[in-house]
Image 1 (tube, rainbow, N blue to C red):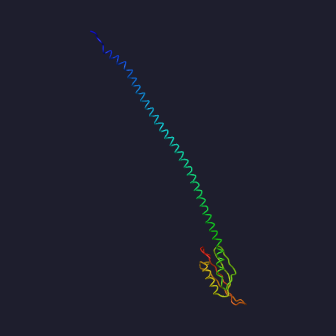
Image 2 (image 1 turned 90 degrees about the horizontal axis):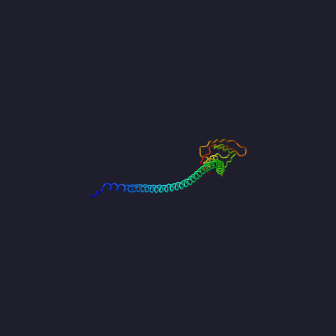
Image 3 (image 1 turned 45 degrees about the horizontal axis):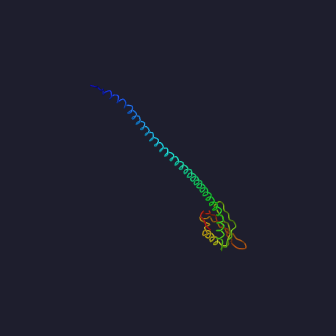
Length: 189
């Protein structure tokens, strides 16, 4: 009878397949690491591209922001200039009104005299207070003159009136008058 030790062959065969199994395991681990590395590289590359795209978009938005800021600065300068011009215009209008008041006064005074038997000796305007001095042969003409001044909107407030009479040797009775009033703001001749 021949005896065959099968246990040894089993042992030998199990030891000889062991390096192959280890090789396959090592290869599996290596392929797994390679797969993870490739996936990691792909993910990193994708994220890097997204980051570069966002940086480019950020640059475009910053350039747009600079343009918008320049436009806003330009508009603010324009508004400041417009405000300065408005103030200047208001000052000029106020100056024109002040300069126009004596012209309106003289125009209204001269228009009111037409057709009446009176003459003016003195016209004085200090600030807004006007004083008219004159003479007439008829007292009713002085009253008509005051009414005409009110119609021409020279007198807009209650005036102070003083009338004196005296004898003139050649012409008879002469009435001297003084009218004092405050020149209104909204007068038109």
